[in-house]
Structure formats: C-alpha cells, structure tokens
Length: 118
Image 1: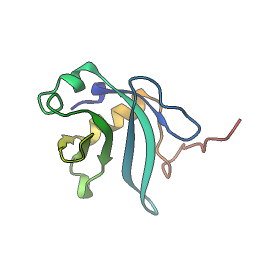
Image 2 (image 1 turned 90 degrees about the horizontal axis):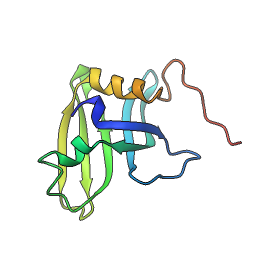
Image 3 (image 1 turned 45 degrees about the vertical axis):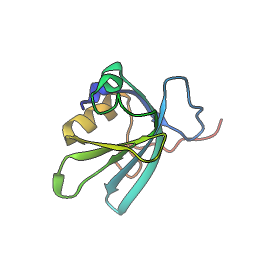
C-alpha cells in the first residue's frame, strides 16, 4: 500500500460519510501518550483491486496502527463478516505523505487546529 491508495482523508468530527468513503481509525503516538482519532477516507481503485481486498465481503473500516521504534505502520482492513481481516505494512514515509496529501495534522502534533462547530 502507498499514500496514493488513500485520498480525501478528513476527520469524522462534524462530518458526514460521503459515498465511496470508509470509516478509518488512526492509533498513533504523540508526546503525552497514545491517541485514537476517527476519520473518513476514500480508498483508490488500486486499493479495491488488491488481491487481498477483492475476496472480502465488503469493508466496514480501516485501522492505521503505529508500531513502536519506527517500524512500519500496520493497516488493518475489517471485513463486513467480522471473520476476515487483512493486514498490510505501511512505511512511515507513505503514512506521512497520505496525511500531507489531504492536509491532515494529527491531534497532539504541532500545527493541529481543533475543529469547531459552525
């Protein structure tokens, strides 16, 4: 998986899931601990055509899980049956590129601006 496999990443807070979007959780480290944030993302056609994804009944959610000591992130894709899971390695550089492509700064990181209700 690469950054180009995921587009239009945005916080779920104050958002509505659009057609083609999948719920995503990002579990990450920051200076005071560990945090889980909830987003929506649009997987690319390459994602849906991946040999590991095609046999799934459907996708209910994706988890990006930061690993310790700079190891590649893990991507966990949940199947609608809840009996199948698919894992991918996701290098730190690709994860950061995905965030940059969607102009996302994770909570707890410098530059994060808390969303406000309009």
